[in-house]
Amino acid sequence: LLAAPSASARQRKDPSCPEGYRTYVDTRISGAGNPSLQRHQMDNRKLFSSYACERCAKGAITVVDGYGWNVCLGGRPKLPCGPHAAPVGTGDPDRPEVCVPCPAGQRQVVVNGSLRCLPHDCKAGTAPARHRGVVEEYRCVDPYEDPDLIVWENVVPSAPKAPPPVPSCAEGQGLLWDATAKEYRCEACGEGRTLLSRYGYPVCGRETVPRCGKREAFVDVHDLRGRAQCEKCPRRYTLSEESGVPRCLRPG
Image (cartoon, rainbow, N blue to C red; front, top):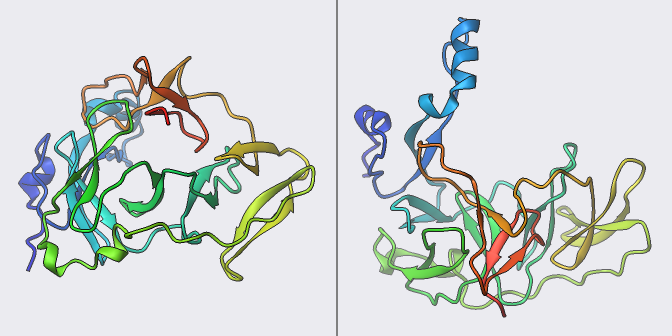
């Protein structure tokens, strides 16, 4: 049986989460009964953040990324998409994400409960773990769990499955995944929404203010020191916003 993380582990600044748990920053604000304290905590959020451990979903495995954090791979995603597809951001609060097929060279993986399209070439027996830093590169690592007990096709499929046919949408229409019919269809964007390009597909959404500066990509910050969440892409790397989040990818 897996031991749940102890209270002391949840309270430490950098816990060593056990097998079957992921590491994350807990930014929940306590002291709801005291408005003054709550405002102080909101204004100084990083001072009141703490590291915590959260159990991975059933069927997921645990790997350690370049920051030394536990990451859950596999299991059932929060927002299911079709084969070889993942949600992308739309900037629309009414529908913040829609599913589109993954681009060439990337594969569908469930990361911490969310489907992602990742550029990796790991074979069964190892799993992708992101390097430390702004560049989205992955190394193939051994999981915590016994490899012989893992159903690898549910975590890192041997080859991408072909996505269902994608229709050619008319002008003013965006792509939408119908989870009930398990097929893609087109929808009219309507007033207040515009067409956005996600992995080369049109989706309906809203233009939002970029979260990062010129040639900067979003970094999933893994500490409580308040470091910048955006960093410039190194030379020879490509800035891509096709997923709705700025990413630094290796060319080709």
